Image (cartoon, rainbow, N blue to C red):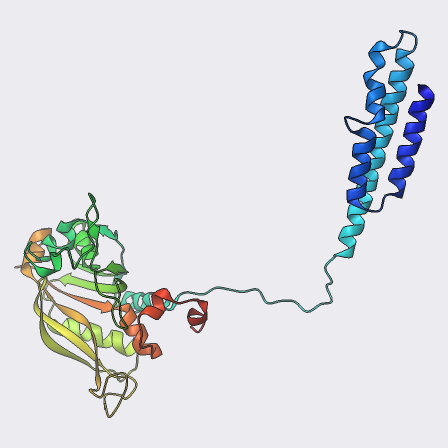
Length: 337
């Protein structure tokens, strides 16, 4: 039996030394050290040997097993090293520039607008997108019978409020916890049940501003919007107000910017459709009822509020005629910016 063990050892070492592939080496491991290998059979018969033979056979079989395993490990390491050397990186090849991401055009514009207002003394604030009816409607002087509260105009969530229709809700939350003076802008995503087309989407982005202090006037509002427009679009941009109605401001206005493409001249301009003006958003002086809802004294304080559609500004700036491109496009669109 000692001679057989030595022969098994010699044969295994010779075959392992000749192996040139990892797969073949694995097959040799199974053949010589596997559960059904001849060496394992010999080791399983140790208990049937006499006491005078058992020590010598046990030592020989253990030594053979160890030698075979060491040979397998050494051969495997050598084969792996050779394989890695064959696929090593060639440092003389020209490199590949890694792809780097950048801000989405809407996020980039939101940051730019926030930066402009910060330079004007406004703080940037945020609030929840899932709101309750009080902050989204009641506190903004929008009664229960107002059309905006119709189920067809607003996304209501079962048992937990609704998706905010404007970032004015953030202004309410700030006024509830902050005594005047207050000067904040609130960028964020909003939701309305609008039919999706080239100029409408069920989700969109706004940045709304609020300024509350003593003796704040409509002139302060216009001055703020003019400064913002000229920093954002063109130093010659003009702003005009048109009378309008919003439940939370009184008086209320819609405001337009002079077209930056035709410089307000119209004459066949595709952006302003020949009018020389581009509708931007709504604004006005904060309604006293809103101040009363948050605990401000309307006899002591006044303020203005305004809203800007971020998609609207982006479409004007980049000459884009379909709002859906911002929210439903692939990288071929966003990589342009």
